Image 1 (tube, rainbow, N blue to C red):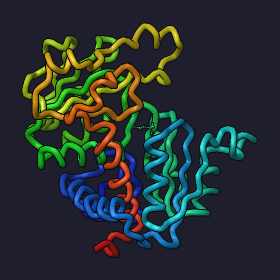
Image 2: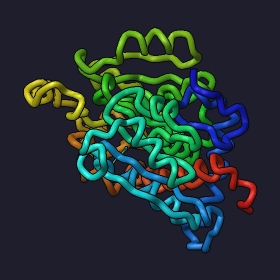
Image 3: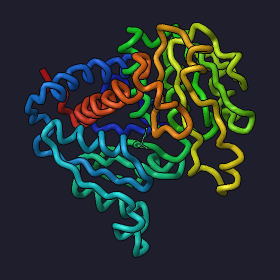
Image 4: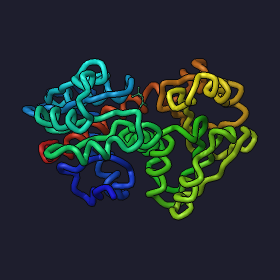
Length: 323
Ligand code: CP
């Protein structure tokens, strides 16, 4: 059982959305709006002056790494960055994962960790003696900070996180961003999510069973004709090549429904938004990028930095300094 936030983020590990209540999520989103002002007005900030955050990424990343690094710097803090520890740290000489965490926690106030294996952020939180761990994606498991940015993006458009209808498509089995967003939306009342995937890439049975006990309604579909006409958002996600045992297995599974202008015209509606955690591989035709409903390269990306600014301030107990 991970520690619940319960209104108090200070020194807490952030491993999964199941630690959050609606109020905790609202607190992050509210603070994110103040962070947007700091970031977009280039207002100099010293909120994290004297703080160092370590970014340890065992798996490639553009957005999560880039936005965490920018978030700390936006607030006047500094980062220690280790990309690919297997090559560029003493992990290469055989140092254990636990010792690696304990070494880097000696140099910083918080560790942001990405790792290809489910449960590694939790293992790091058990290894660390002194500093909180933020899960920046653990295999096909969780990606809580991505979900906070997705929830902020949805909230900005609809002003609520309940009574929504969404479609999540692509690699539903392996996508940690889908898993975490389902978890995030299940905390709020009366959301309905259509999961569009091939039979091979359906949500795992135990996850489906888990959501049956919550307030979210999940409807699995395998063809675009079953997409509801009243969806508030579409959340498209690439097939996660790195989770397949072989290239052959990936090649067999990789075909998904790409959003093209024709597809959007046939199945979409005027008021929806189009989201993708990115990178987009076969998910959305670039012709869609100029459509005002396409938020993936605009607010969805930027919101990632604002919510990470907010979250780090809360965890380091610096949020009171923000006016
Ligand atoms: N959305 C996301 O996690 O992207 P990166 O893998 O580039 O961080």
